[in-house]
Length: 270
Length: 270
Image (cartoon, rainbow over all chains, first blue to last red; front, top):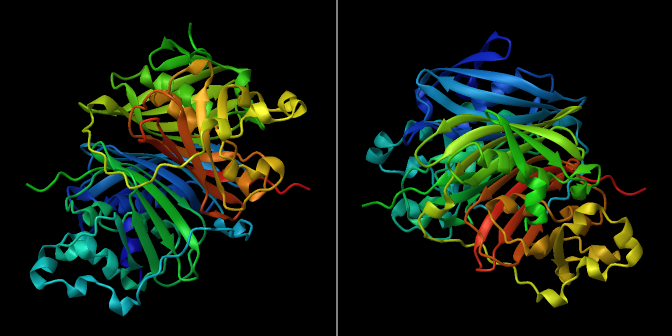
């Protein structure tokens, strides 16, 4: 059986560097379709455009909010070497240009196996002590954005005070992540994972949607099977915008992806 | 008198969205022209292509090493709103496509003045206690890359052990930065500043040149006049690559720019 994620990010080649996608309403959040899901759709099209199997780095500029329904992805090769390909990609819908992206693909399986990472793995309480949607009141679940039903996200209670009206003010949210259907992580699903959490501004008491201007993700290794750990942080909230850094750690304790985005701050609630 | 930096990053419009540049040999380092300098040249061309004066975010993919001499920058508008413009840009020389970039421009002067930054300003010893090129032996200075003569860079001795054969192994380099001719910092010069330091891998005992695959910079405020503080760090060195984060702090203590790049590790010396 094909997992939900794979059905929803599928693209069909319709010409040289042209792909048809159907953006699923299941990934809607805030004023549009989730940016990480869109990145995974782009990632699929890019992967179909080169012999190099894995995204190494993808930079996306979000031009307008995507809507569920048909979309076209076009890709263009800029440079290919023996080990990498750099490409441009655009996601377009009737009504507008949604995303412009640049990406370099390569083979994560062929990289040397040195690991000198000094970042430290987040310490999370066990799954059963973390807060998932299952704990939310039924009326919250009924009105929650569809996005939150696409995966199991279990927040570290120490960074989830915002869910009960007590944001910590630190600008840090972390938790466990797993796609529906026990779909195991791979490099393309990491493109989604880096943008699956709520905006880190929730932890600063700003509960609104935070539109992304730009998001760059580096995929550094193929993730081991199992639950992922996500860690979102902001260190520079100023001038109506904020930077949000995400780290994705796999079940083997490897930092498999890092992303940084620049987003607009949600407006303070009135 | 026009400052050296402004002379060297100047571009001349030669058509709709087309600019002629002359890459100065003064910015050569390693196997090519410094990536931050190239970003500033691109920044100038992009600034000439929109009414929005300042770079907010620029993402550059380095396709091949640039050489001193003539270059052409082309820009293409992707989306313009009342407050921002998102553009694509390419830097091309005879012999190859050097850089593909995406960027969003806006007006840093019009942003709200809230600052909720939680990152902390680097504590540096006073200028006169830091290590500049003036301290290097004359034969080192004579053979140093031209890049190092374009600005005054004063390293915090606590993070400059690599200069005397004693890298700390932490992956951190910080110091003071000022352009020649006392040219005051502005948003375009920050595009250079984020890539002006030696690779942070020097502090890990790897002294070679580290080619950048991708670099994204967020410019968050117009810098105050005076010396800048630069802080370079890597937290994820693995698989033959490393991420390098740069923070730029101005003389008023504001975090004015953040960058992250993915680069290839220098090969270990034989």
